Image 1 (cartoon, one colour):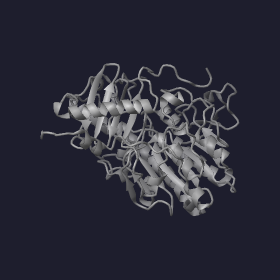
Image 2: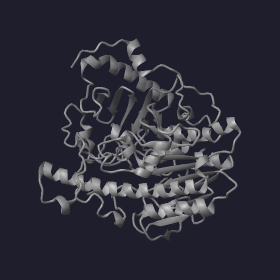
Image 3: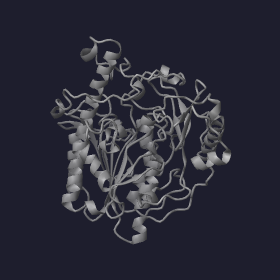
Length: 502
């Protein structure tokens, strides 16, 4: 490896640290133009990795296309570096609703959102929007700030799902105790039909809408619609380069986790019937193929139902004044490092697809490489609607990025923290810049450093490499700065959630 000569000035210039964040409120497009407030359609799937969205150009792009989701990128902007701040379902959703990190909004793991907080739907409802959510909600407390909702209880079922409808909530405040109504069909199709019904028949036509259109798919256990049974039959799904990663130089965290393909934890990817006759690498290859085909069949159902709604927006004339967003609640491992699920701060789990279409406001086919976070979603949508962003929100509006302008003081680093829950995945926190990633597994007291330019697959831990000593020093300073700025106490292990119903 070539030698490295670093100076503090060179390092700061490379990663852009030391610039203050802009805290002044920015003027939203709706406000500056005086035009009608835009409708907002926020589409979110569960566990949909960017590598499984074909416009991101991964190894899967040619074999598993997502043409309808890709339409949003073709007509709008694709974000290459959109990350989550805690890669599990409920905490990510709480962050999207509140614009705050887990340690501030009180949702560290799988607990209820304290609805006494200021949230994105509450603020848009107050600003005159008709607000709605259909599909997966997974925040456990009764929805607040919505004029209409129809949601899956908890994870919900893939086939013939039950929904809890607005007006059927339980007075205890726990949404899962509400009255349930069953629907025939696959959940993605049912959610798609409900979305069309909302747009056609429920929303008032004299108000802008904020509509959260959320899929259960492609969350495990990947039960696809029956019509996709033969999809990918006989196909060979390309393997990731790191499927048989040996974890050399890495911390013990990867060696301890039960997220590996073929794990008996939950039997999610074991597939005894299909692969039990095989051994060693041959079995793991077969398990990977079975896992990926099931997962991608679920993705196909999501893509189809995204297309149904996009088609309606265009036919109805709503498309021109509607911001359309497609994203996922977190990333997901599709065999990278031999893993499935999420949690880790590695790229495949950290990164989410994020696509935005806004006709006449966003240049079609544009791509952004700045660091944006799910904590930024609420401030950005408020900004787009011309609504003031509360000072308690910790994210920042990236509306200027949508307009093709990166502020000089835009963030050059991001903070991540995962709290121990299950899979025996070690809790950790860390900092990522455009060039480097530093991770600390706090319970086992081990560090990892990756040079993302030289090692984008994150195979070589450089933490103990003396050539990176100055990088480690500067990244630790940046990590401490972010923790201080964001008011995260490293001794807070997430065992005291705040639900509002204690």
